[in-house]
Amino acid sequence: MNTISRLQTRQLIVLAVLALVTLTYTGIHYARLGSAVGIGEYTVRAVFPDSGGIFTDAEVTYQGVAVGRVSALRLTNAGVDVDLRLKTGAARVPAASTAVVADRSAVGEQFVDLRPTSAAGPFLHEGSVITDVAIPPPLDTVISSA
Image (cartoon, rainbow, N blue to C red; front, side):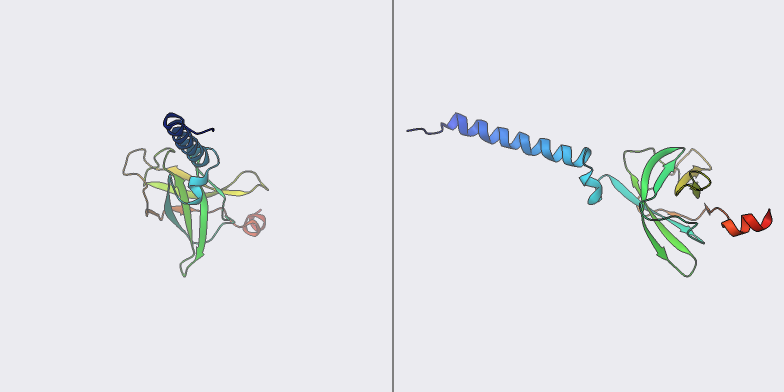
């Protein structure tokens, strides 16, 4: 009769635990499952007078480095509130930053660029609000002024 000894049972349990830990680590870090549930990220709100062509899932950069994504846009009486989901492992962004809707090229997609006015703290954190913002002028305004 083939039976599993206690030693083999313990080895199988250890192997199963190691496999579970490995799969969890891989899922969080490489498949980015953590971002789907908000692990490793925090949300900052930028208050814009107009959307400037920004859209959900647009990239958010800080000094040219990707630090997050636009997670939501909400229309308000004052304009548009844009939720920026920033990675906690990315660079610390000073709270004294301007959120600028920028273009990759003349016909490229828009993204939000966080431009610091000071390198010193305090830094953005969960729930911070950015009111210093800039958007590109509408295309018809640019054409009519030419």
